[in-house]
Length: 612
Image 1 (cartoon, rainbow, N blue to C red):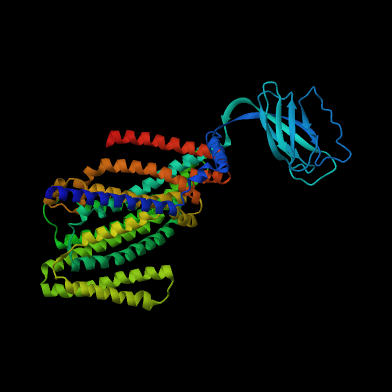
Image 2: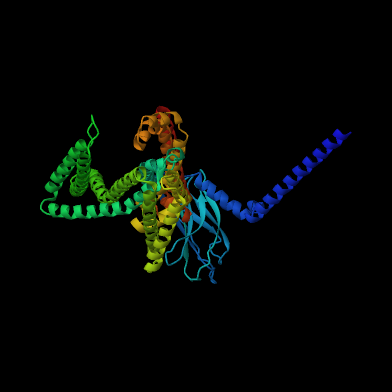
C-alpha cells in the first residue's frame, strides 16, 4: 500500500508540473501575441487581399522582355457635364475603328458605357479622358475580342465644367517583332554584376584580414603564451614608440621620394623601385642565411639588426616608388586602352592603395619590432637578474606602461567627445594607469609569468563580437559619408563585417584542430610562427576555403540590403522600384538575385568537393 501511495503522489506531482508548464507556455505566447500585435482578422480584409493579389500577380510577371508596339488611337467627343441644349450628334466613320459612348455626356463620378468596334482583335490598352488642356487621365482599360469589339464601363472624372466637347480616347496596343530584353533587364544585369564583384572584393579583403586575426582569437594557441611582467610592460611600451617611428619614417621617405620624382616620375620611379627591392633582397639574404654552423656573436647580431633596419627603410622606399610608378603608368594607360581602360585604372588604384597602406604597414612593423625587442629585453632581465632587481624593474616598467596605455585611451576619448582638458584626458588617466601598473607589479611575484595570451584572446574576441553585432546596414551609412554613395561604400561595410564573422569561424576551426601536431612541432623548439605554419595551417586550409565561399554567398545576399542605405549593388535598384510600386521591375531584380545565389551555391559546392 505504501508503494502505491508513493507512486500516486509522484504521478500527481508530475501531472501538476506538466500542467503548470503548459499554462506558463500559454501565458508566454499570449503575451507574445499581444506584444507583436497579432491580428488574423486583417488577413481577411477585402482591401488588403486585393492589394496582395495585385502585388503577387505583378511579381509573377517580371518585366524581363518587351516588344516593339504599335498603337491604334480612336477618339470620341464627351461632354462634362451634359449641355443644356442637348448633346450634338456625332456620326463616326464606320469604315474605320470607332467608339460609341452611352451616354455621350454625364456629370462627375457618373458611369458611362464605352463600346469599340473594328479594333484590332485580341488587344488591350487604356481608355483615357483628355480635357482641353491635353493632360491625359486613364479612367479604364479595354480588351478586344476576336472580332475587334470591346465594351467597358468607366467613371467620368471630376473636372471643371466646360461648354465645349472634351475627348475620350481608346488606345489599343499590340506587339510586333520578336521579344527583346527590356531596359529593366539591362539595368538589372549591370547592377547584379556590380553586386557580385562588390561581394567578391568585400570577401577578399575581409578574408585577408580575418586570417591573421583568427590566430589571436584561438584559445588553444593563445592560452599557452605567458611572459613575465617586465617583458609584457616593455613590449607594451614598444608599440606606441615603434608606431611613431614607423609613421615618421614614411613621412621622411615620401619627402625624399618627392624630390627624386620631380625630375622624371616614370624613370625615377622605375629605377627607385628596382634599387629599393634589390637592397631589401640583399639585406634579407645576408641577415637570414640558409645555413648557419654556429651561433652569431654579439657584434654580428648588432650588424644584422642595423642591416634589417636599413632593409626596412629600403623596402618602404621601394613601396613608395612602386606606388608612384603605378599611379603614373595606370593613369597614362586609361585612354590608350579604350574599352580596356579599366586595367589602367586598376593599376592606378593599386598604387593609391600602396600609398594609403604604407604608413599602416610601417607603423605595425615598427611597433611589432620594438615590442618584440622590448619583450626580449624584459625576458632577459627576468631570467638573469636577482628577484629584488626584477621587482624594481617591474615597478617602473609596469607604471610607465599603464600610464602610456591610459593616456592613449584618454586621447581617444578626447577625440570622440572633444573634452579639450588635458587634466581629464591625459594626466588623470595617466595617473590611474600608473597606479594600476604599480598595483599589478606589487601583487605579482617578480618572475612569475603572466597569462598575456589569454588577455589578448579575450580582447580580440570582445572586439570581434562588438564589430559583428553591428549590422552592415548601419556600417554602410558611415562609409557612405566617407567615400560617397555607391558600391565602394558597400564593399567596405561588408568587408568590415566579414572580418568579424570569418575571424570567429576561423578561430573556432583552429580551436578544433588536432593537438598532436601542435605538441610535436613545439617539442622541436619551434617558435610561434613556425608552429602556425607547420602544425596549424595544414589542418585548416579545407574548412577555411569552405567558410570563405559561404561568406561570399552571404555577402551577395547582404548586398541587396545595404543597397537600401546607398551601398550600391542591385539593392539600390530594388529599393527604388519597390518605393515606386514598380513590382514587375522589382520581380526582375529578385529573379536575378535568386539565380546568382543558386549559381554561387553550385560553384561553391564544386569547389568544396574538390578541395575540402
